[in-house]
Structure formats: C-alpha cells, structure tokens
Amino acid sequence: VQLVESGGGVAQAGGSLRLSCTGSGFSFDDVNAVAWFRQAPGKAREGISAMNFHEGGRRYYDDSVRGRFTISADDAKDTVYLDVSTLKLDDTAVYFCAITFSVNIAVGRQAMLQPGRYRHWGQGIQVTVSS
Image (tube, rainbow, N blue to C red; front, side):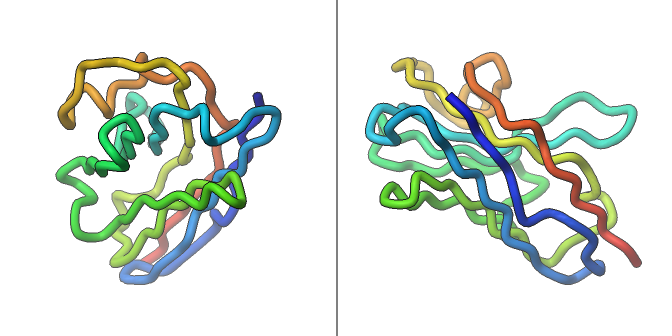
C-alpha cells in the first residue's frame, strides 16, 4: 500500500491549492475511510478532513477549515483530493493523507479525525502560505 501526496507548494494568503493523494497497491473499493491531516512546526498532527465511505461518503471537517477546504475522491483514479481555498498563514504545515481498510463503528467528527484510526499514510507534502 502506497499513498503519494502532490500539489503542495507556496501560495499567497487568500489563494487556493488542490492537494492530491494517489494510492497504489490496493483497490479504493476496499477503503473504508480517508482523511487529511496536517502538522505545523512544533505542533501535534491534527485531523482536518475525512470521508467515511462506510457512511456513504459522509464528509467531516475540523472547525479551522470548514467552509474553506473540501475533500473529495475519484475512485476511477484511486485519488483523494483536498481543495483548499481562502488560505491563511496558519494553514502553513505539512499535509498528510491517510486511509483505513477497517470498519470502525465509531463515527462523528472527533472519531473520524483521530490519527489512530488510520493505518496507512502518505509521506506528507509541504504547504506554505505567504502574506
């Protein structure tokens, strides 16, 4: 199982980016949930968005990104996207995608954005927001 993020880089505050997470070595039909996390320097990794296929693709967002970030998936391309807009300086971080094949009956935003729920991770990609 391999996940590779792309699309990061430097963007101006107020701007937009599209992050992609492409998987290989597995079928997206077997994925139960996907999520995006980020980690800023000196801070803990935080969950920002998730999609639970077990709930029919229900989406979850942390309050810090709700209304600005959108998670989506393209099964045909085995890719998960995170569209980020209205970027803020505080969005500067390394962004990670993660998946789980396991069915977990615990749902809700807090449960879905827990790092421990996800078994497989990408290597991360830097997003830097400049003023």
